[in-house]
Length: 208
Ligand SMILES: [Zn+2]
Ligand SMILES: [Zn+2]
Image (tube, rainbow, N blue to C red; front, side, top):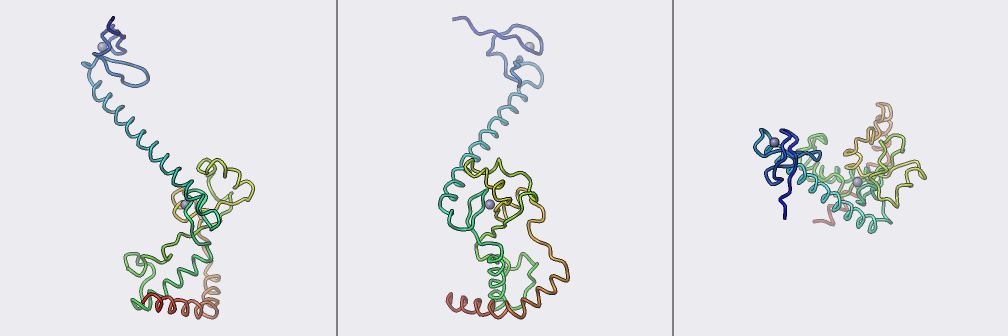
C-alpha cells in the first residue's frame, strides 16, 4: 500500500503524511518547521476544551429538563428549571430569616455578607423573578425548544436570581426610590413586622 503523501503548506514539498501535523484550517506542515508542534498542541487543547464544553452543555440540558419536568407545578426558572419562591414570597422569607437571625445573633449588618446571619437569607430557596421580556436580552435560544414560544406569548421571562445575574439581566431587582423605601418601612413596621416576628419565633421554636 502506498504511503500517503501530502503537500506541506509551509515549504510546498510533497512529503510523507506521517511527517506532518495538522496546523488548522485543513493545512498540514512538516513537524520540523518552527512552531508546528506548538500549533498542533494548541489545536489539540482547543479540541479537548470544546469537547468538555459540549459535554457540560449536554449534561446541563439533561438536568434542566429533569428539573423542568419535576417543578412544572411550582414557580420555577425557565432557564435552569430550578424551583423557587415567587419574588414577593421570597422577600417575605428573607424578612423572616433576618428576624430569626436577629434572635440568634443580635443586631447584625445585613450588608456584611461574611456574617453567618446573611448566609441563608432565602431559606435555601431561589427567588423566581418575573421580568418583562423587553428588559431582558434575548434568552430564547437558552430555553428548552418546547418552551421557546413562552416569552412571546406571555411577554415575560421567569428567571431565578442566579440565571438573571448570569445572563446580565439589568434591573432584575426593582430599585425603589427613597420615598418609596420610607413608605415601605412604615408599611413594614405597621403591618408586616408583627407577622414576620411571629413567624420567626414559631419557626425557631419548631427547630429547637
Ligand atoms: Zn515543509
Ligand atoms: Zn435559573
